[in-house]
Each structure stands twice: as structure tokens, then as C-alpha cells.
Amino acid sequence: MSANKACPLLLQDGKLLWFRHPLAGCQLVKGTIEPGEGAAEAALRELSEEAGIRHARATRDLGEWASGYQGQRWSFTLCEVDALLPQAWTHFCADDGGLQLNFFWHPLTAAAPADSHPLYHRALAEARRRLADVPPPLAPGEKERI
Image (cartoon, rainbow, N blue to C red):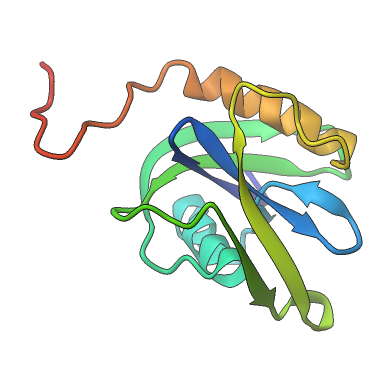
């Protein structure tokens, strides 16, 4: 079975992008992979739709994870942007009749926010495991190490 959910992982200063859903608590950006869409394409679409981030790029496929929740199989994609994003912002998402989602950066090494569904606690642990083998991004002007 292939992935049916895309989860873009966007990091800034050692923190991972999260949002607070007005009804369902804190979550990672995640959404359905549409028919004919690749996982990286879906990850970028979800960042745009849910967070309003339209200038991201997918930099690494981090593989698939069987979440154990409602048959969801997630594809993790490491994403990057060239500019620093705000520490927090609100974005209107048209999903579910329109919602205000409150975005924030949460330390990658910290426990998931207390008001997250247990699924996101497990997803964070899995994301950490997958990110552990990824080399840190190059600083501006730094040359790739060979």
C-alpha cells in the first residue's frame, strides 16, 4: 500500500512547523495525496493550502510511515524556504468550511504540544527518527561538504 497522506516537515532554527486547529488541537501540516499527485507535490500543496506558504520546495523524501490510525500511511517530505518565516501567524484555510489556523514553531526535540492527538505524538517521534540522518542545511554562502 502506498502513502495516502503527505506530511511536509519544515524546520527553522531547530524548530518544526505546527499549527493549532480551533477544534482539534495542535497538529503537523498533513493532508490527502490526491489521485495522480506525487507525495512531494502533495506536501507542497498542503503547505500552501493550510499554511499559506507558497515558496517552499521539497528537498528530501524521508519515506513512508504506517501511522496505525484509520489506515493512514504518511509520506514525510523535508521542505525548505529561502526566507525566515514569522515566529507565529494565522492563516485562513478553506477546508471544512473555512478555519483560522494558528501556526507556530515548536522545538524538534521537545515533546509534542499537550493538546495534540496521540497520532501527532507518534508522528513527531517518527519524524525525529527520520530527520536524525539528514545533514544540516548549508549556511548562506557555505559550500557543500564532499
